[in-house]
Length: 489
Length: 103
Image (cartoon, rainbow over the protein chains, first blue to last red):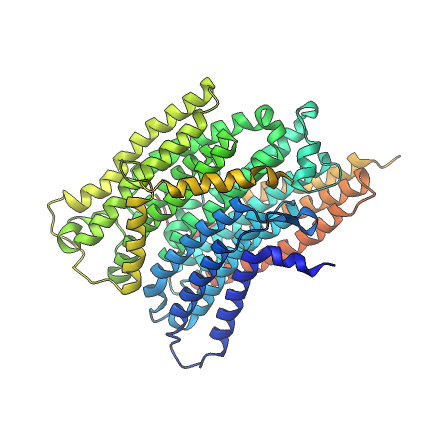
């Protein structure tokens, strides 16, 4: 065997190396110490790793017989995920120093890195075996992360809900894949399946198989009607984990879904998938919005908001072309900074006061004006108000969908637009609670830690400038353009 | 009687349906986990059957089955650990009692 092929897996090797270093540092540091060095150690190492992944050009060739490919688009997506994970690490810095977390914070970082490793495999996989291994090594450690707050019962309850639905969804996905395998001519390579499955042999079994695959991945993305676990898991999980779950794992799943959706089953796309996706996207956006309106708990609120945002992300897959993938990646990036901006505020307030209800945020601008401004910007960006980044990401993804000039897609965009207006209502409820409510603030003024301030600053910078600085979108487009056809092989 | 592909698929489909039925109706987490195992095993069985009957020349389905079994074992281990935590916290593994989060 040619071991030089491992050189092509550089991003995975870097993450694995960081994981091992953190693991060793955690294991061999003195038992009694509070391991203060671990957080900066991990963050700096991870930042260096991210820069290395970004700078080193990807080889763009498929290795291991075509099982694995690391092209420009995959690399760009991995960098986007890394940004999210880095901001999550900064946000968690305060929480991991709390009393019952101090001894276990090494585990937290290790699990975070292992899930990221799984997501990398998911993104780069061009064979269903590698994809499943990536998917599972991404979702199993997340279950452990959700259960991380040992002393809070809700954490365990959320974890059991997550793991049971995750196993169920992978069971459904595996069953669907086994039917796909029957059609595939004995190979599970994406390219072989794409060559074998054509519109000519559409049958009930194939339709059923595709529906199963859609359902299996829909669970991971929490698309309606597979979203029922989302709110409970988001509410029960530790807030830093919720932030991670809502952006990073969703982004990776969306990218992998696009690859499978367009490149593997692209041939039967219009015959089988288009109307399924059409219905699922409309249901996702609408149901997410309608349920978000009546939430008072901020974490549940963000859960339903993220369900509806997942619908917008999947709009990119309706376009099913290069532009769709590029605008989807841009949307994910913007969503990462906007959502993490909101979670930065929620996390730091919860760490200080334990309050997570929307009513507790009343009058926040009097006690913590900077927090209120940051939260307002995040809400504006999530709702898509110009000139913030969320507006541009929504515009770009709508444009990519309408590119093909079909009446049905115009209708889809219209429905999505109407939903954007509905979403404005509940995003502005938070803003109203913070700025307009005349009540005395429940949350006393506090000074947040350095890490939290840095993470909040990064998010605000992203929200304000990401839409205006067009080179980020250009980077997405060029990376997709450079690799889209390569990825098929 | 000649045993063809279809006869082998019947137990797999029955297992899948039992698994889904059990997942939906059972109230005990351990029983739900057993149902999930049925679903996963039916998928493994499918892969092995399709490989044996449709593509006897290759081994891809068999290899996939081996990996899927390992993954299922890992999933069960994590799920059992979490269920034990729940049991320690509330002394029960009934899903009716794990409903503290609503609305």
